[in-house]
Image 1 (tube, rainbow, N blue to C red):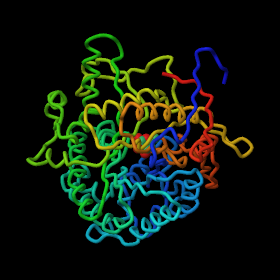
Image 2 (spheres, rainbow, N blue to C red):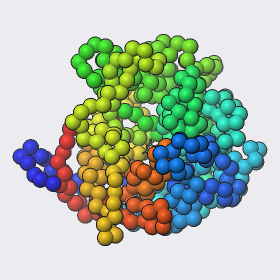
Image 3 (tube, protein in one colour):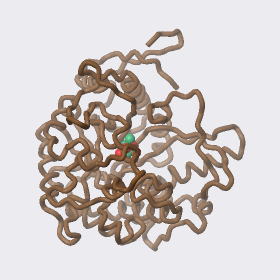
Length: 462
Ligand code: FCB
């Protein structure tokens, strides 16, 4: 990379971050485990979705994925070798639900072993209870559109936290309710592939309610529990200086961000969004809004990219559309690269909502990696990582109580509707042989975490 006068170069050291900071990587069950039919696992909505032609870009599924169900000791060894002290993973509800009446002990046994494996390696377990793999049998009863799923979730959480709560203090209820609701039920890009605004909004309410009702159950089962939720949030900018675009950006921010943050922090659903949604607004029963506002111990931020928004009368309930900005740095997925966006979001959450603690529960990038002589030279991903860690350091210096960072992802994995075409890992995974190769970005993270304080020669971008 050539040096120009305007470039500034970043030096980062682990000691720049507070003592006790949690350094981790993040994964999710359906994306890595495979073992679709083992030990009493039932189908999830993703198993079915992947069987529908045209849903997954490469026609693949998570039936084998990274075969983590069998290779987990090797994968946890990788996490330990990186020098991480925390590991975020998800528990597959389809492994636990059993016949719908009794939890499946063999599924619980797997997570029992996995958690012990983490503790043996000095990795603090950070389970997510729902990372999109709803059991199909619950979908058949209406899925997240049905209120019954809220109670089924609470029963499932009860079973898991009773079993693992003696060793696991941190619990994340949901991963990215926006995606569960909107990708699952509005644009249909994700399972269960429904395209209906009212269904999406009803699903979002039930997901939030299930969070609110699960938190006290976790606290009752786990002494000293620390509970939170992981949200996908985006900095939203108007595409132009026009008043119309500014208003559209505000509405879009309403559904992307405030629709989740406001009720979780006791402000109720945003009035402007409810008005824009009209008949599509969800049915909310007395007590729901109070239940959702249950105090939590931390908020997880999954940060990937900002969005520019223009007014678009007639498109969707918000009359807003995402504008593709020219001349902006992007990953291979087309997502804008903007470390300052993460800084801005962390400050905003802290200023406007004041969570006790924040964790970056996901952040990462996808590039078209190739293996050359047994190595993966992914300088762009290292640059992405370094620049986001520099932004994180700035947020902490500005007084935002960020207490941990989890890189997405430990492994290349099944990237939902994109199948295996999008590599996000610090470790390269060859799907055919299941061989793992630590990428240069993973080596950088490892050296940084081992205190080698590598100076990263990457120009800082806005
Ligand atoms: C997030 C998801 C995660 C992964 C990354 C790239 O939205 O939580 O499972 O797919 O995006």
